[in-house]
Structure formats: structure tokens, C-alpha cells
Length: 217
Image 1 (cartoon, rainbow, N blue to C red):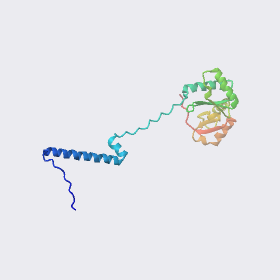
Image 2: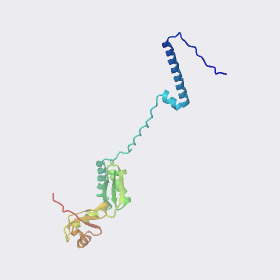
Image 3: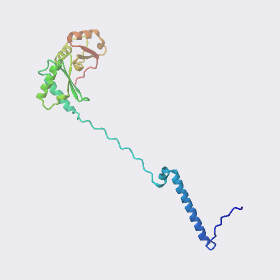
Image 4: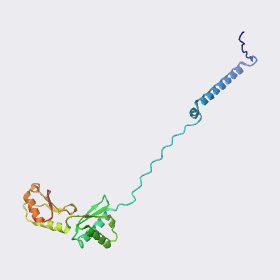
């Protein structure tokens, strides 16, 4: 049995240009259908890529700045005023226990060194009564072995004594722990000078070290 051939009627009456246009239109519709099929088969990801503009990624919100410290540091003059008020009491009614003061600018406090901590707090209260504007909450009371009055007497004795070497200077050691005495480099290693200083200073410890002569103003 022979294969039946499909015959397509020929529009011989149409102009050649019209026939070509129809063939082009049919080809375009076929490609469009194929494209639609391809989009449907590729799924939603492909459809988004073709039919929807890409969405820009959302940038993370900038980090919030760190909060500023709530407390305002006291100015250096403020700490100086506080130390002055404490020293006034220490050199007066509380000289029997007052050792020294140190301004701790980084900590925003004043360290008060006394030989009796309980009475040292009474010194702070007296300073507050005399100067109500000071902030005594910034005072740190610490213990020390000697009073300023004792160290001053030892210092005077050292500077006026006849010693085996010249003394350049004498000053209070940190935290009222004794005396710092400066002399020339050779004498700083002299056992004889050290012994003489101990005899003069009494119970106040003396640290001897090399230094420079004090220039007259």
C-alpha cells in the first residue's frame, strides 16, 4: 500500500510577497512558542532572569556607634582643688596621720595616704565641710607607714647634717614610704654614706641614688 502524501493547496493566486510574509509570520510564532516552552520548562529561576529585573541586595544597616560614657571626667583643676582641700586638713588638724596625696588623672581620683585609714575618712569629711563644692566621692584613702611631718623632719636633718659626701637633693618617696636622697654616682654606692644617712634619718628608710646637682635659679 503506498504512503499517502499530504498535499497542501497552493495559493497560486497570491502574490509572492504575501506568501513570504505569511511564512515569516508563521516562523516567528513558532519561535515564540518554543521560547515560551523553554521558559516554562526552566522553572521559576529562569523566568525571573528573563521577565523580572534583578533585585539589588540589601546592604546591612550600619552599626550603631558605641554610647558615650555617662560620667564626665573631672577637669585637672577640679582634681587639684580636691587635693588642695585634703592637704589643707592634712597639714592642719590631721597632721599626725597625714602622709601624702597623689592626683590620679587617668582614674579621675585623688589618692590620700594616711597612717590611720579610719581617721583618714574623717579628714575627707572635714575637707568637705570646709569646701562643700569638692567631690569627695573621688577620694581613695590608702594606708602609709609614715606621716608627712615625720618625713619632713628626717629630710631637714639629712640636708643639714655633715655627711661624708655632698647631697644633691632629698624628697619624699612615693606613698610616704621614706626618703629618696640623690648624690653623685660614686657616693651613691658608698656604704659609709648609707650608714650616715640611716643614723641621721632615724626610723625613716632612706633610698640613695645617683642624681644631678641642683642648679641655682
